[in-house]
Amino acid sequence: MAKRFLMTQIWRIQQSYALLSLVLWGIVIALTANPLLLPYLQHNLGVDPTAPGVVAGTLVLVFIGVFALLFVFGVVYDKYLHLWRDQLDVTYDRNPYAREKLMVKEILVWRHMFLPAMQATASSDPKTRKEVAFMEKWIERSLAADPNIRRSVEEAERVITGGETQRT
Image 1 (tube, rainbow, N blue to C red):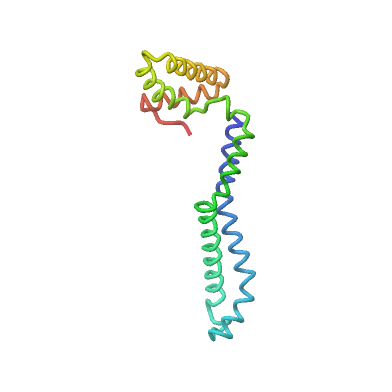
Image 2: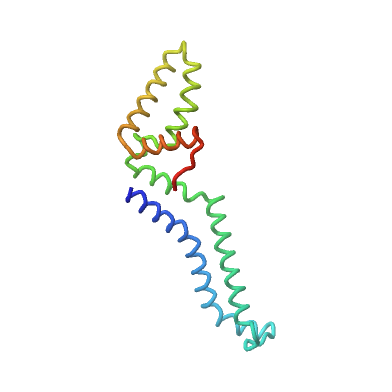
């Protein structure tokens, strides 16, 4: 229970860190670039750096520019370069439970969607019956090996079939 709570908090920190770091880097770059931009604005555009709002406006514009540049880089990185996919493969390979244990959603999908469909069509095919038995055995082993998974599956089935609200 404590481990799951701690993992949830770490995940929340990691998820919010990406946006927080983007904002912090934007602020740092904006404050660093401001002394370089003010002389340019004064010389080329004739803007007086001592006028009210010039410094704040420059900082806001530089921040928005840096934020947009980093955001566009993130979109290109995600949509077109696909460089993160190898990282997911490494994460999968390092997870000791990724291969032999089924997760809650997998168990629910197999139990309530795939297995009933396979059982309905497998009445005469021994190979399909063998595969159904294999999956049922795998599900039972996963449930027996990990009480947290068993409890989560039971809770999800109660929520789905009984209409109870889920605990957070």
